[in-house]
Image (cartoon, rainbow, N blue to C red; front, side):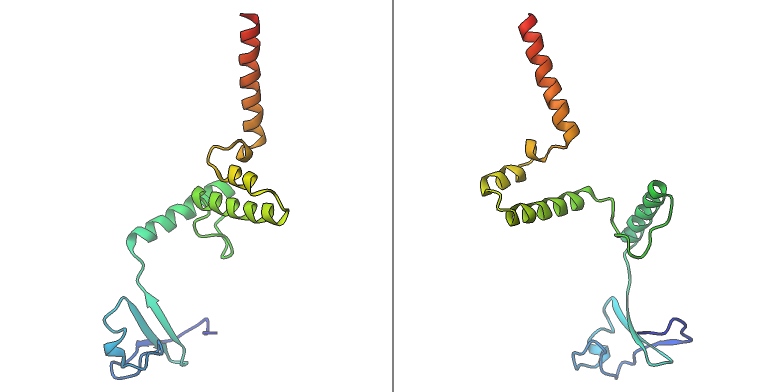
Length: 144
């Protein structure tokens, strides 16, 4: 593991073998790419990659939202893009299907669950609202 405190770093020399393991000299391998290799005084070699400004902005926005909602800065163990609903929905869907199959739920029900807008995927609050809406319509039709 690299040391926490490093004094100096230098870019790998052009005539040295590239640390990526290709067996090619650095100047013909990674020297002209966005991935640069550096060596520290203690012998540690690290690769650095430039992050596009758009990604930096997205990360900062995500950090601000996290802090606003949870009242703290994200820890290293917190997901980077924690607020991406499509990622959460997809993960939940995959895990639920896996559990349903393990519980021997018929494939027809799993298919119905997968279908967007399915009542099988509705939250209890959504189901209650649907029942109240349909029962209200039935009451209106009986008293009309």
